[in-house]
Length: 468
Image (cartoon, rainbow, N blue to C red; front, side):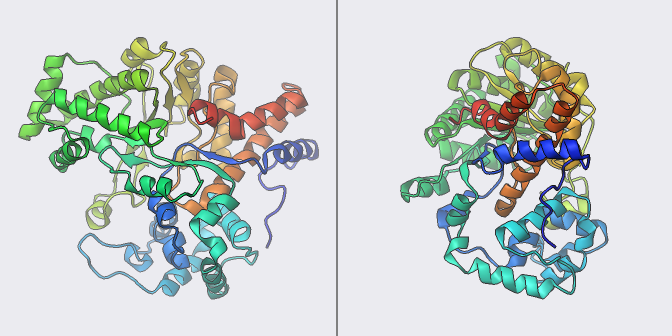
């Protein structure tokens, strides 16, 4: 069944007509993707995508977390085990199982994205279910073998103007280098993410410090050399085109330590005696340091707090991280960010983009912070709330206090390359729906809404992330 042209719009005829008109203004604008997790190797290699199951099911935790919630073992979906134990390797069986349970995605953003991918990317309008599974599998497999479905061809077809990846502080960025040296004109930029070298109680932290030493060419043996190595890596990322950094933390707690305290905690970490409390204090201090560095080098600082990672211990120990068992938790911003914003929130060169998984903070804390501090912008509805209702709740909660122009535009934050246009299209439709409501209630004039939707879909992301 083909996608309905009025999907996600208000069924009220007057509002729907306005939404149609507003959406038409942005439907074909280029895609600006300032934050996401697409593997740059896909575009560096530019080789055909694998079979449909390996492309759509196995790498996407949005997909297999839903199936797992209904009792389907991850092994049956081909998810590799850390111990190398047996998992399903027949892609057709995996796809059949996925199709048999596709009804589970009804009403979810994942279901909306997947339907968009099937029709808009592969030209498939038949509904996916158990009976249609193999016909659709074969149709996708045939398309994937064609040159126009190579990653770079799709990048152009999707009208992606710029795509930013997320890369560890120790990454050599060789894939980014290969892209640049290939002569291809697609704009793919790295983003500096130092989480692995900041979490001093992670079992692999000292290994990460060794990698930082190797990547930076600086022997990291104390706190001072650690800071120099991070600054060197940021400079390298910026040379490779980076415009931003990204920081995933449990809490946005910030507090500046003295040089002696920071050195002491770093020494404890090297000795293997640092505690969880030490790690929280060190991370809070390093957020202050990263803000200072952003004032110096101009890289936009993104903060993604509030996820309780790997909540399902058995899944984590059996399959590893990023397997769909991260759970949101309550987050406090006003007091936690006070030290950072009092020191850097008024700095002209500093830009801090805040995200949350705690929707209760939108109106209470985040919109007031962004509506005051020149450095602060609100990131879009993120992760679990990157959805139709989640986006509407976000707009309704923050607009009256922060306005539209203290928000950061849209980012798709995805690992699934083929879902990028679906995610942008959904957001553009939802924003059209929201703006149509404001026009119908005479809060905005039609010409104002036409300007705003272009900024929400395109201009704000470019401006926020310095991607002009």
